[in-house]
Structure formats: structure tokens, C-alpha cells
Length: 389
Image 1 (cartoon, rainbow, N blue to C red):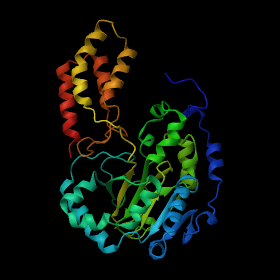
Image 2: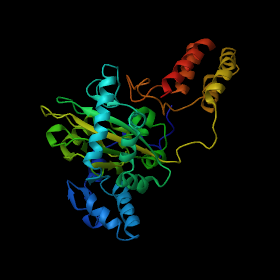
Image 3: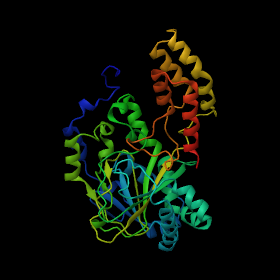
Image 4: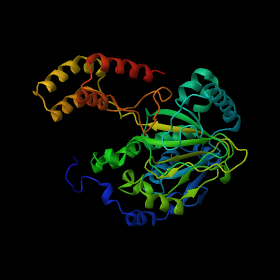
């Protein structure tokens, strides 16, 4: 049951295309991003060589630049491009490692969030895999000043990086337009359960980025973006609405990238990887998802052990009618892990959905279907193995 309709809750049925159009009528003010080299389709483009020179000349430039980027992501178009962010020699060394990983993993069943499984080469947890395969190349790559500056500008210090490689082969189809993690990985029905202020907060917890590992002309299908769409209040509720998809297709921008360029954007920006119409370009990008240090609980809790101890009692209390289903759900919410992430997406891919099933969802289903404690324990054993790197 949905909470009652009020300004504190957002409903998919209330999402209007005209409201999105009003948001998109905004234009990027060049005066608000004075450090950009130019605007391309309302998107500020920064010359990293020039930025590095200015960063070395005075202490005041760094906070000014970070404030400008934060404005771009929150109040401006929601996206910026950093030309020449990573040196080509550094990119090439890491690309070679990524290709080795892709060849080693090819043939495995790999789900994808917003594209058909198998339509491209996806390397989950590329961060750890690169670190273990080639620590030196990892160090040279992530010692990068621009990647760190962008991450800190949005999230402050103590951020955490994860990365996934996406290699779209010639003929690879486009993704459907979407928002990203966290609420972007919920269905509209699930996202409706979160109050409106959580819809506003979710984008503040992550920064999305991508480093081009090859030159990406338009025919190779670089990502499509809808500038300013991160400010649309109902944006997490419209991914499956055809009229919104059509509007996206008609008004999106597409930015060609050179090898070593980086793009950073607000995760609430509507976007989609484009179709690779080229005959010979393997469009490889390292997708960076940078998370806030504050997205964690203060105490370490062994929810797996709690669930195993509680489940037989919950099964009995429910069977005897001592606790009704709503009451059982509340106990599950207070004990079992409610989030599917973080997980190992190699072993636990989002097949058939945007995210794997959470432990809370499984425990609730087990109670409803009357699983034995041994059956639930076996599922939990298998789930724990899937989450290991």
C-alpha cells in the first residue's frame, strides 16, 4: 500500500511530460562555468592541460573550480567533460589489462542493468580485478588528479571508487534512457515507496563518471544525455514511460570523446549508452561510480547470523498467528539486510531485473511460502558465496 498522496511523496501517475519540458527549457549559463573552454550542446567542456596549469599557479583556483563543478552537477546541466583527463599511455596500459580480463571471462553469463545481457562485454568490479592483475598500472591510473578532483568536488574526502568496464561491440544496441544508482536501480513501484526528500538525496550520494579508453566518434555510440534532466522531480519514476523515452530520443545530446577524455555527471541525469553503428570500433569505457563516505551504518552488524537465529522463531510465530504478516515484515526489516548491494555482479548479476533480490525480500518470501530453516540457510550460504570477490 502506498503512503497517502501528499507533497512528501511522488507518484509515477503524477509525472507529466510538460513538467520535464519546463525543466529542460533552462539553458546553461556560460557565466556560471567560467573555467570551461567551451559549451558543447549545453555541456561545459574543460581543457585539463589548461586546468593543470592554473591549479599550479595559486591556491584559490582549486576550490573555485570544485565549486563550479558542483554547480554544474546540481543546478546546471548535470554533466561536464574533461578533455585529456588521463594520459594515453596510461589508458593504453590499462586497456590491455581490461582486454585480457574480457577474454578470460568471455562466455560467462553476464547480466546488464539497462541493456540485453550479452550485447556487450561487461567487466564487473574492474577496480579490484585491475588492481590484482597489474598494481603498477592501477596506481598510475588512479593517481590521476582530475578523477580525484571531480570525486571530491561532489562527495568531499573519503569517497570510494568502484568501476565497471563496458565494451560495446559494433552493432551493439542502445540502452534505454534511465537514471543511475541508487534509486535508478528501483522500479517505479519501488521508488514510490521512498519519500520525496530521498529522491532529492539519492543523487548526492554518488557521482557517475566514464573514462574513454578509445576514441569515440558519434558513429561508435557514445552515451546520450539529457542536460538539466537531473532537476526533474519525478525522474526516477518514468523509465518505462514511452512518451518520456520518445522525448529523450528527440532532445538528447551526444558527445564525441577522445581516448583519455572523462565525463562526470549527476546520477539523476537521464542518459543511455548509444548504438554502436560503426563497423570496427570497440567502444570501451571504464565506468566510474564514486560513493560518499557517509552511505554506511556506524556499527558492524552480522545480519546473516541474526537472520539465521530469528527465522525459525518467525516461522513459528507466524504459523501460530502470534504475529501477522505486517508484524513479521517489521521484524525482518529490523534484522535482515535490506539492500542487494554491494555484491559481486559476476556471481550475482541483475538477470531479469535491475538488481539482485535483497536478503530482506528473500526472507519475506520464505516466510510467505513456508520455507524450512534449512532451505533458507542454504540460500544464505549460496548468497554469501556470490558476494565474495
